[in-house]
Figure 1 (spheres, one colour):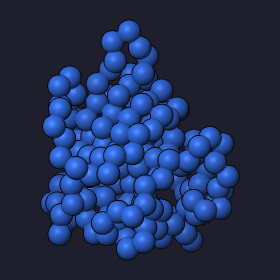
Figure 2: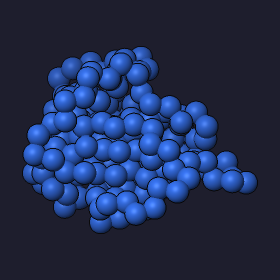
Figure 3: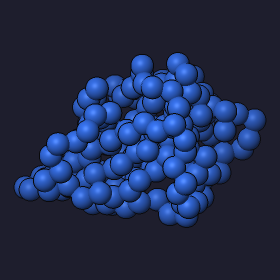
Figure 4: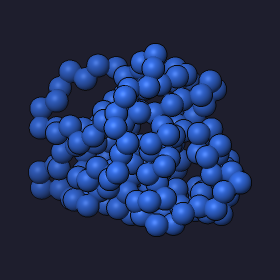
Length: 167
């Protein structure tokens, strides 16, 4: 599977488990501080986050196959993502993520997307290690990202993340 996308990030790109986000945010007050409000979701495997300081405009792909061509790409981060059975995974900008968490208690279905929504479904349930590869395109302000899902039976024992990776 390969899903291509374009996204205006407002400085942060997020890949979120729909079910994981709703479970975590429901019944709690969302912390608007950055990155403090996102880090617990990253550490529990509900969200993958990347700060896009080099460009707010991102073109990318989400793949769940082995990458053959890493030429020009730099590995930026590795994180865990938990995908529930019948879950969907969304690629969100920081403003979409904040709106969903603060005004819709993490319920993505209650949010009216401003632009085309980027959703991945029919994914294998369980843990995935997410490798994020990035490069700046020459003569362009656009950042290229490949988000690679590698499925595993158990959560990889990364240390707790204390900062969001930055490109």
